[in-house]
Length: 106
Image (cartoon, rainbow, N blue to C red):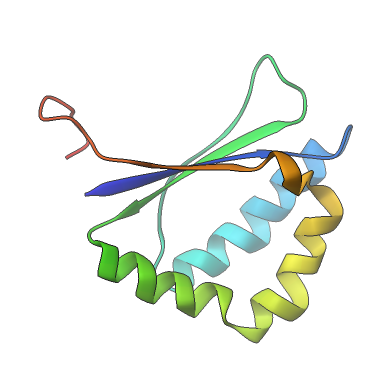
C-alpha cells in the first residue's frame, strides 16, 4: 500500500465551506471513481488547514483512478472551479508515503 497525504489551506475564514464541499461532493465523487479515502481532518491549531489521506494499492491504480477523476468533465467543469474558489492552492502540499515495516497501515 501507498498513502497520499493531501494538505490544503482554505482561503481565510472559508474552511467550513471547504470541508462541507469536500465531504458532500469531492470525497464521494472520488470514491465513486475508485479512490480509497482513508481519512479527513481539520487542523486543531490552524483555522484554515484541511488534510485528507488517500490509499493506493499500486502506482498503476493511482494513475488509472486519478485519470478517471481529474480527466472527467464533472471535475474540470464543476468541482475544480468550486474548490478553487475556496482554497489557497499555492499552499497545497501532496506527499506520497510508504508505510514502514512496523506500521499497522500495511
